Image 1 (tube, rainbow, N blue to C red):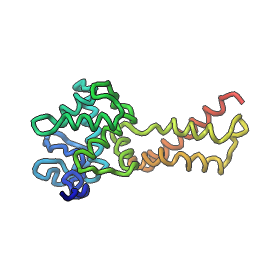
Image 2: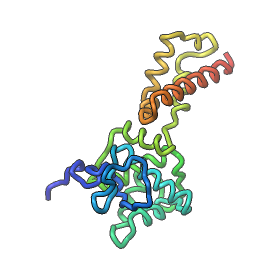
Image 3: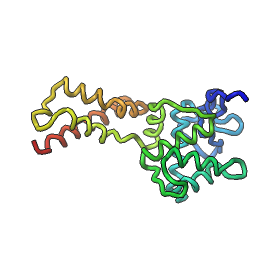
Image 4: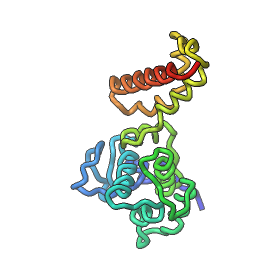
Length: 213
């Protein structure tokens, strides 16, 4: 039996890798024109499609009180249409929790693997680059922990107040080492992204200056 090309799947072609059904009342950000292929939503970018997937999962979590993988996937992929038990097992394994353990979908480290597992299940093993997923989750309001990453960079550039007088070269090092976190801001307006990056770096430097020498 030949393997399906993930990029030939309906979800990939629609830039809707969660296969979210089109409901006219749901005005998703980034809907394409036409907004539906007859059943499923169509989006202008993969980031917008993944953002919708993440936003729907957090709606299940917040509005409907679904706080375990089993309860979330039971609603996402009901047994009448899916092998829901197998789906639950795959997603729980990817997130690294038991099927009935509580999850917090406002945590990037739990939402991201759930989103990736659903995409892989819906689209024949499809895997997006990390930057695409992180940009989408940033659009959904659950960005990667950039401030923590920048703090770690600051603590590795040296110790004591003297080490923070790094000048241009030191700032370049901070920016380069923090690149994975900064990349996730690529979906924001340029001036907003720049402001976020500069504020985060300044906050880390001030925090470091307050530490004992």
